[in-house]
Image (tube, rainbow, N blue to C red):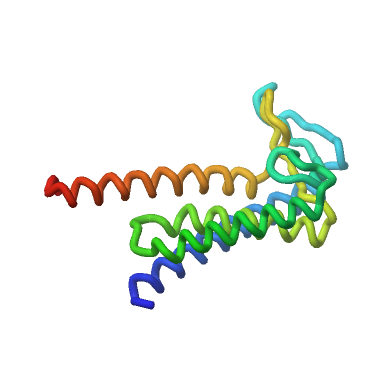
Amino acid sequence: MTTDSRSTVALAGLAAIAVLAVDQATKVAVRASLDPGEEREVLGQVVELTYVRNTGVAFGQLAGNGALVAILVAAAVAGLLWYFFTHLSTPWIWLPAGMVVGGALGNLIDRVGEGAVTDFVKLPGWPAFNVADFSITAGVILMVLIAELHARRLRREARGEG
């Protein structure tokens, strides 16, 4: 592994640790200050804090299907890691990789330690979610965007358009 590749992996690791730390700190605060099902308005009717114990995946999907959830999460993380390690030279790829891995680890810690994921941010028309869910979703979107922009740049360079 080259020095640049090691730096990319290290940056992804730091991003994952940052996401994991914020995710776990916010979940500890919610569990300490709210009872399950309790809701508190934060920004009027725009944002509510609510303590939801989620046995599914992001936004409550597949609730109660623990084995299927574990298989799907493991497959998704494996696919992401394969993509990451085969595209280490892609600029900024470390950021979405770290976001997704950090989020996945945050929710895994909840599943193992609490028996369910702690969700707490509630927006109008959306199921409750947490920092990990947001990080995973934003990380996947960012990874697709980075991959597409990198592919476009490579095509322009191949055509001699620099």
